[in-house]
View 1 (tube, rainbow, N blue to C red):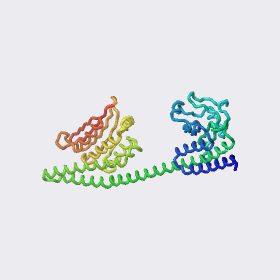
View 2: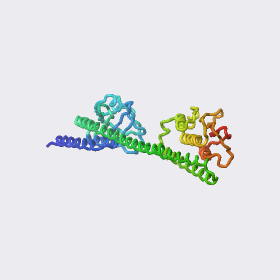
View 3: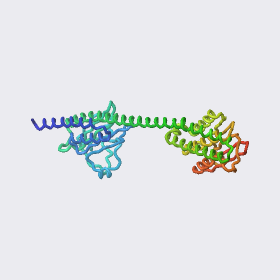
View 4: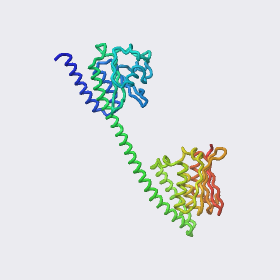
Length: 382
């Protein structure tokens, strides 16, 4: 066997091995690095590079072989596809030059770029589209790249195109699997949240209403007081469970605007209790409170819950508006029986509302007249 025949067989074997190596790799980044390494090894090039093309047919990623990190730093920004590289992008077919410095298309080399002469380039095709290009320069032990070098690179480019598409499909499958897993988790959390809301909260609410009704019939003041304390404890448990539901359903406000969520709460109260409930929401005010929407919704929810349990009202209105001075105001008023706000324990649940408003950097006011309804107001500075 002659040396030439041995070289051909050796290169054929290298290409077979290259195909097996690329087919076994499913990480796209690793595939791209392997392609450059194999191209340099098979052709005997001193320098190799792979340019990944973006949607605008400009190089958006540039992987190199044979250039040190220090040299790369001195060269500066990677190429985007001008000169000889741009010619290869435009032609979309192999390109071989004995001396690229003598080609009229050769320009754009930065001052610190190492000198390069012989050149061989070929496109990477994946499912009929050009994914990028292989660039090889300075054939070791020869002045130019040969016909056999070009043929070998074309074969490698074909193998590389298949490997790139395999890696991309694998990554897409992984992303789809992760998304499916995430959706399954969200669906399970949604199911648990629904069971908590429709089962546990409603049961606790019914118990609380029963205890509150028992207060009116209690003859012993001490027993009445204990029953009221029990009702307050149940209110606290209901608030905690609702907070857990918000934690289980983090997307509850991601797909619903704040104004829609407030109107939804008002509609729920009306359907559940028969209290005619109206929502008046200023879009500007809702937009400014969007980052604190969870707290606002919980505040409205607790205020409406107080109306349902304590007010004996026929109508209720929730207003969110932006005042002339830029202050954001949330107001919940009803036409119920009212209460003496200064009487001990008269404002059951108001302390929690006030604490939530203050934690949001606002001020809280409760106004009520016996027999003439109640108005609670929360304000946040502009």
